[in-house]
Length: 590
Image (cartoon, rainbow, N blue to C red; front, side, top):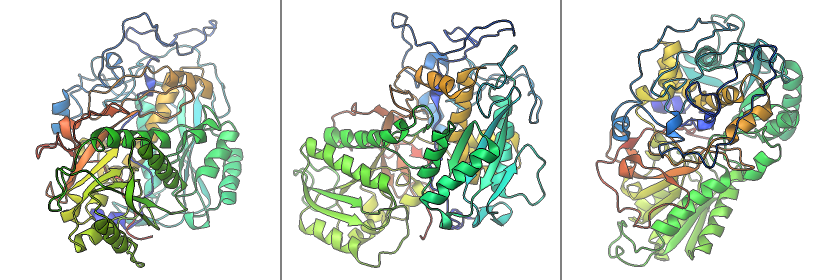
């Protein structure tokens, strides 16, 4: 099945997240660390809690997220990682027993210093646990299990290695029970993750038990139905944590669950910082808050674009001249996060002296082949051309009609685009006019990804299901990062598992720059519940590989917000820049 055929099935709007949560950081090292897991006997009362690093102690060197703890570094040099691997693992001890509910006392760690898995962002190794896990420490947590619920839209169809499969509606599944022969691909995929994360991550004598709820269907989703689902799901499953994979309108579900003391991961779209602070320590995301996305983009524009003349326009006589700016944004009310992103970007750009000679808006965001039936794109590009716009600033929202309209007008300005987790996708970008989009740069916090077979999620999936790579790449990689973030939180929390212990563990991560293109700088600032703090700039090469790719200068180097170099945006561009294989598909039609 081709990528285009798969996309026509309506891929869910969640960033596959590329990258992983260094959140385990200062917690639970078995090598020298301030946070060794207490191997307490039942008679001991030692409280496990993350301890902030001693400010007077030697600081860890740069290298991902605390490279000295093994969290932000792969086993190869950055250049080697770009070319083909996520590192060379040390010889492994035997695999722990398979199966839900087992209480293994050893975990198969890798690397030097050891990490929990082969993923370069996996937590430091906690290979052994013996002692008291304190039993039922929180609703959804028992002495031998942790209840985890996956909230997923029912009805509709999903492409798989078996063809097209119909999803049930309004139905629960307990993945500790045997599978049926005709089980849906999403359930089969989640069974693989249930096995993998229980085997590889430290859960202190508990087995993570997966439940899945398929809703009535995305088409019937309203604020009221999402909240009603949350109430009923909570009462039916009593989960410790929920992974919210609703396609759209999932915020009311997240808020209702969090208000009931349930931890929520996933959720898909960027959110303002205030969204997380409504229920502190209950709602978590790997990618940044909306404000951080806006800062990454606008600090790049203000440092690398505004203070320099035009340098990569395809219009005659423009290079070397002062820039004139045009703004593109969406007015799609179904994406309030993009409306908020655009407002934040405009405010920040005005503050560094950007004025817009022309502006244009588009009605629907999130589709790469939605036809323009009203002519907004051609009208907008004609207005930009007439106003002498040399540099188009795009404030988020996937849409490809503008580049096609510019091509029709033989108009080839510079494009500086704010990523939103969909604009960054190579497959989505390939739907643009290649004669126009070859002058596009995208600024994004998403991580650089190697080819599909070498991605951490693919390797993890095929470890547990060697014959399931196709479904693993198609669906498993979509869900890998938030599941890993949850299991990282469980591991850093220690035996006495509560949301407060998870919160303390995440916030013990020191802020450290990344030196590995496959690894984001991850830390949690005060009152902050998102991980990624840095980003990359990528340019589109329509001639790379089969359908084009976004190339990343400086061997994929990542920059913290506000620390972009002041040289021109295209100064480091080279035809040898590595390709980013990040993908997040969007539906072809609404």
